[in-house]
Image (cartoon, rainbow, N blue to C red; front, side):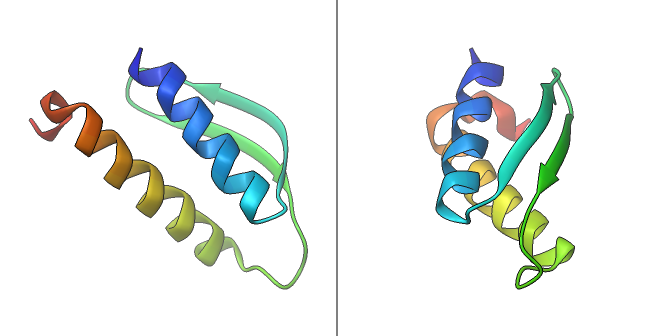
Amino acid sequence: MVQLHCRGLIGQVCDILDVKIIKRVVSKDHIHLLVSYGKELSVSDLVKRLKGRSTRLLLEEFSELRR
């Protein structure tokens, strides 16, 4: 359930940022992404936005993840 929700959140953020997901693997405790994006966005900025939004929303919905 958490993995599916996380997958959806990452897709939403990538749509907003105009990032194309080429390959995505969501495991229990980590995520692998292969993406294509414009040069106006740095890797660190992309990761910060993906992690920030998805983490905040996942923790709101699944409080057991705080442990």
